Image (cartoon, rainbow, N blue to C red; front, side):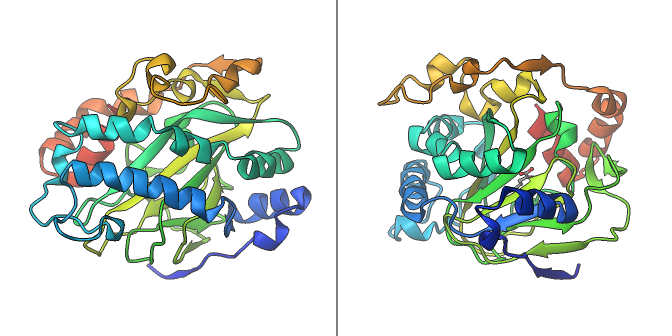
Length: 310
Ligand SMILES: O=C(O)CCC(=O)C(=O)O
């Protein structure tokens, strides 16, 4: 796969028209230092301290180096270690990165109307030797109207540490055919894969139909990131996007907020007159039995796709 560097759109930051034009032409925007670096680093150390408590990290090494213990089996993370994921996901400062004023004002400029930041989001702990996320489009999994995804590295990561890659200009032809389950897009792209080294504070924004995937984490370090979704508040949204995700370990927002110090920005989406619609499950429902069969036959990437949806 040929990869070229992200086009840096930081110079367009205050120009809403130019940002939306580039987003609609290329399908993505890469912006350096949108979120104050020190805020991201603070969240990074909080999450890495939890990772260390969970014994994911190599003993007697600097926690900030995020070196993963060779003996650690990352498959336990969704099982016995779910309590650590829960603590990470509910972290107040992590939530506040998603709704930072620099982020919301940027999306207000892009949408040219008030922004709804989806309260649900995904925190990724991407381990060495872990299966990388295959190419896909987020619309299949998130549903609702038009939205953008913002991918945020929680650290300084070289490409080799499993940075996200997007296929520039891949968003213009609707939902594409995939190997299965929306994962593993089959068609050739007229567009171009782009990625690059990223730093804490940088953000990668892309359209709901832009094809993207994670590159292999070839290092011995944990890569942590979050991906959150944003839309014009007038667009439709699914219940899934306003419900705490499975990693939170919480059934309701009251439990997510249980240990927060401040009430600021709790339940912020209730101020909007949201148009909530069901998630169209048709593409998944048709193929479930076959998907399980493929996963059972040992296809690791299919197994990971299924786990993500459970
Ligand atoms: O962070 C990753 O590796 C995957 C993120 C992703 O697929 C997404 O943001 O939709």
